[in-house]
Image 1 (tube, rainbow, N blue to C red):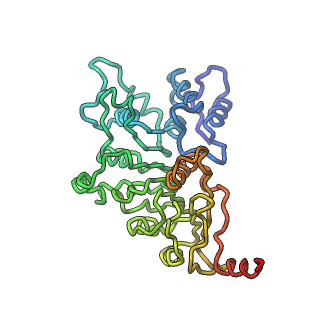
Image 2: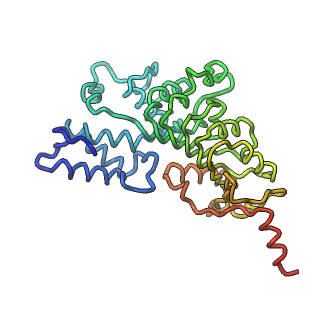
Image 3: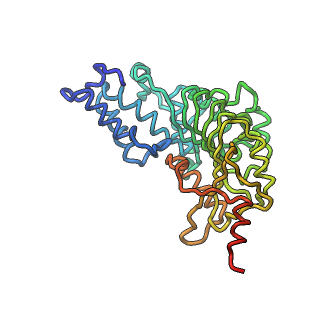
Length: 345
C-alpha cells in the first residue's frame, strides 16, 4: 500500500486513491506479463513523462513509476542523459548543460525518493548520436552506472555488444575484480537478460538470480557454463540451442546444476529441434528439465537461424513473456525407441 501524502493531490479534488489506481494501471503494474522496461515511444512512457510535467506534486508520484518501468537506454544519448541526471561524471559530453541553463531540480529529485528496479541497457551509437558527436559507451561507464543503480535492481536486460569493451579495455579496467563486478552489487536481482559477451567482462553472476536468458549458442563455452551454474538459486535458464548439441552436453547440465529445480529452454527454429544422440532417459526425480522453444521463421527468409533466435530471446525477454512461451519437453531415448517401435516398417 502506498503512503498517501499531500504530494499525491496533484489534481486538486481528485481522490488520492483514484490517482494512484490510474497511474498503476497506466504503468501496467497489474499486468501478469510486465515488460522489463517500456521504450520511449511507448504510450505508457509518454503518458508518465507528461504527468511529471503537470505539477511539482504530481512529479513526485509519476516519476517513481517512470524510472521504475521506463528506463530504456537504447542509445548513447539517453544513456549519457541518465548518467548526467544521476550526477555521474561523463567528461566532455556533447549534451552537457550550457552555462546558465537550468539543470536538475535536486530538491525535487531527491524528494521523489526514486528507486530504480528495472532497466534495459543496450546503448547503440545511432546516426543521431553521431550527428551530435556522441561517442560509444565505454566499459567504465557501464561499471559506474551498474554500481550506482545495482543495489535496487530486480530485473535487468544488458546488451554488451554496443559497448566499447575490447580485450585491451577489459585488461586495463579489470571488471572481474570485486570492486568493479556490477553483478556482485545486485543482491535483489532475480531476472537477467544478457548478451553472450557479458561473461567476458563480468564472470561472476548475481548471487540470487532466478531467471537467466543469455544469447550464447548452447552452454558448451566454459565461461558461459561457469557463469550459469554458479547460481544455486537459478530456476529458469534460456539460451540458443547449440548446433552440435549431444547427450554429453545434456549430462553436463545435469551434473553441474546444484539447485533445487531448473527448467532449461533451448531456443531455435522448429526444424533444428531434434533429440541429440546419446541423450539420457528422463525420470521423475530429475532436478533439470529440458524444453524446446520454437522461433518463428523469417517472413522473407533472409535471416539466419542464429539471428532469428537471438532477436526472439531479446524481444520476448524484454516484453516479459519469455518464461511463459509455448514449449515442449525434449524427447528422451525412451521416447525415440517408442516411436521406432510404432512407426510402420
